[in-house]
Each structure stands twice: as C-alpha cells, then as structure tokens.
Image: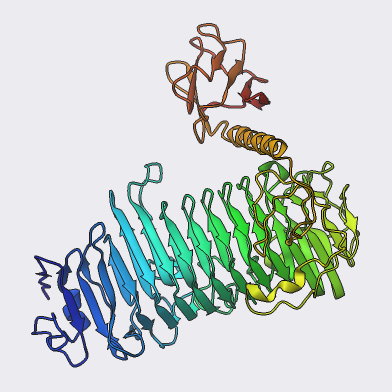
Length: 636
C-alpha cells in the first residue's frame, strides 16, 4: 500500500474530525469534517494548524500525524463541542494512541486514550508518545495537557520500544539505538517539555516518563492511580520541575514473580523519582499507598537516583508508602527538606550514598503509629563507616505500636539480610545532629550529639488525610521544645511546609516555623555561612571529578581526563609524584592552564609507572582548600 501525504500549505488551518464526517471533504468546518484517523494520518500538517475531534465521540485505531509546528505556532490536537473528551481506543494494538516521531512544536490537550484489552505477552501499549530517534535530531516544545489515559495493559517487562519502561501513559524520550557506539556523544536532543493536569489510571507499566529532555522540563498537576510500575520518572533535565502531582497506588505489580515476561525487566519501581539531573526540584507532590511485590526493592515515594546533583525534594507529602525517600550512590549535594511522612513503612529512608556525597535531610517530620520504620543503610560493602547522609532538625515521632530503627541491609530482595545490632559508626555530627526524638527506637537512639528527646507538641499528630491542606496537625503548639532550637542550615529554603517564612535567627525543628518567636537573623553572618557552604560544595564536587581516565600515550605522555572541567574560579596544582619525570615540570598549575578538563604530563622515553606513584591534587577557592593523593596503579 502506498501512502500519499497531503500537504496543508498556506495559512494555518483548523481541521475538524467527526464520526459523521466524510474523508472526501475538506475537513475545514464542522459540516466538512473528516471521519477517520487514517485520513488524519495522511496529512502533513503545517505550523499553526489545529486538529479538533468531536467531543463524546470514539475512534478505534492509532493516530500518527505528520509535520511540525514552529516557534509560537504549534500544531494543536484538541476537541470541539460540549461533552466529554474525544476517545481514541487502541484496542489490542501495540504502541500508542497518539505518537509523534522527530516532530517539534506540538500541543495535545483534552484527549482520552484507552484500550480495555487484556495484556498479551510481547505486546507493549502506550497512551501519548513523543520520541526523538536517529542522529542529529532536535525536538522542541512538546505539550501534553488535560488528557485522560486509562485501562491500558502493556507488558511490565521486555526490551522493545513499546514494553517495560516504554509501556507508559505519557512518554517523551530519546529513543536510543541499542547497537550504537556508546563511546560517541549523543547528537539527538529534546527541549521544552510540559506535561500537566493529566489523569492516568489503571495502567501497566508507568504513568509519566520524560527520558532525555534537558532544558525547560516541567511535570505538574497530574493525577495517577493504580499503576503497575513507576508513577513519574524524569531523567536528564537541568533545573527541571516536578510539582503538584498526586500519585496513588503506584508500583502495584512490579516485582511480581508470577507475571509473564518477567525474566527481562527491572522490578524496582518508585512513585516519583529523578535520575541524571542537575538542580531539579520535586515539590508540593502527594504520594499514597505504593505497592511492593516480592522482588521490588524500592516502593519509595521519592528518589534521588544515580547522578542527581544539587537537586531538591521539598514541601511533599508521603503517606502509607513503602518508604519516603531513597538516596542512591553516585549522587551529590541533594537536599530533602520540609516534607511530611505519615505512616510510611519498610525502609523509611534508604541510604545507598555515603556522607562524602554531601546529601542532606533536614527539617522533615516522620510520624509512625504502627510497624517498624527503618532508616536502611543498604550496601554490599564491608566498610560501613561512610554509608549514609546528614540528618538535621528532623522530628521522628513514634506512638501507638510504631517504632523506628537503624539497620544495615545487604543482598537482593529475596535473600535480604538485616543487621540492626550495630549503630552507624560515623564521626560526630556527620550523620545525625540536632533532631527531635519521641517514642521508641528498636535498637536505641542514633548517636546524635545535639539530640532533643521530648514530645514536640504537635497540634494533632497522625490526622493527615488527603491533600497538603490536611496536615495542619503537624504544626507546633506554643511552648513546644522544638521552637527556636533548630540550627541554621546554609542555603536553606526561605519558607516552611505551610508557607511561613524562615527568616529569623532561631530556626525551629521540624517542618513548621512558628512566626514571631525568634530573634532577628544576623544576615551578614548567614551570608558568610552560605558563601562558605557553596565554596566547600564546589570544591568537594570538583574532587569527585578526579580522574575519570588516566591514559599513557605512545609519545610518552600521560593524559589525565576529568569527568567535568574545573570551574574557572578554582585554582591549584596537579603534581605527578614520580621521579621518572625529567623532561617537564612534575606539576601543572590549574590557574594558568587553558584546558581545565585534561592535563598532560610528559615522561622520558621508556618510563614506567612506578609502584607508589601518586597524583597529588590541591584545589583552592576563596581561601578554602581540598588536598589529597590519588594512587596511580596503571595508565591505560
């Protein structure tokens, strides 16, 4: 069959689609409406065009429109007339109800996508999808707004472009060729993604995924319920925003050993999580009742996953989930603050990071009135001395039959080993400091030099319901021992969970800041503390960049390549502590070298890397230093 594309040239046009229409007509008015999705799929749409489907009507099939919009002239898919959203029913088909491929400037709103067909082995199903694939593509401006995606049963596992993570309600992603040379940089990108005010229910596997888009990524105001896997997964953005979303009953079927296709899938799922992100914010979200099948090691409400740097989780609510927060290894400088967790169970917080990663958990409230809520240090490594993050100004409140504990875990879900007989062996103030503890800890309170063991005097603890507005019970009563007894946190938020300003010189412990009860802040001192914290953080991050690779070239030089360039405001030296070097100085001055990512040392011909050779690195910024040795065992 030959498909002929009709080009809609000239000025922007509005096309109507109705079950009573006729594909032989122009489509340019309700009386001249088209009838089928096949007709829509044959047209090459132009910037500013609109494709409007009749409300209360249903189409069976899949929509794959052609063409792209342009800046400020997007192509729009939406509805006309009064009534419910127009429905696209994909039935038993594989793939999406609406799919865009390498197309920019599209806005999709007021559409309903469904299937109702039972799951079939090997068949992945999707709702609304926009993908960029191939080389040198740059997709811009994808908006999905006010759509309803429901009753679509894809496959939880599998590695096709429609199964596993790609079996998703709303998916925007860069589709990578599995056979491509991974050493080559990715030349295809997506920017400017807005996914807002959509509803997704009864779906396998995932609700919303943005995988690859970098700039101007926003996921907000969406509501999800009864998902087999993850609720919201955002991978890749710089300063992305995930806010005001509600996720109920996610992770319900991931990790179920009886599901077909389970040999080739990732069972660990969470409600809202980010990965490979920088300065991205999760805020004002609500997560309820996550599931956790046998092999799912997650089930958390929120997650700082691999390669999250300086991201924030704030003003969120978590209730009855299998954990409030996961912090993975290969993360740095992330902050969870002013959140409220009510009756989260299993691993309340799971740490796979270590304290040198400078992740911080402060001014949160953790309430439990049944079961044991673990602060779970999960690692297969024998050295436990650094595992964890810093916890400051939090309130841990256990009542009824609830209790907390710290525990070390190892192994996968089916053979998980627990050890709660030892407490975290960290240096003073590097782990717990200045938290409030009320109620039992199964294995004794953590080592907290500034601990407050007292009733924080909440207004009505344990009374959280549906919505952020239901949490007034966690405000502090006048006279609470937590008022004005917190410690200052550099680079802190300027408001608490309830919107009260955090600006006086006496911070409260917990997520509530009592107004008018503290002394005036010393603004100059706080500015200095903020500056110091920023410098120390930047130096610590730069230290982690040394070295990514160490390579000896044929000409006798040794090339040291970093993960990221040294920031322009950092100076210092890199010294090669090996007596073989005679042809050139054994050090490089960072402040004078033009290439701040690759450093080159020249060795005499026939030189070898001697046992005990080291790189000595000294970094300096605004009077602060980081200085350390890197053992050199081999140059490749």
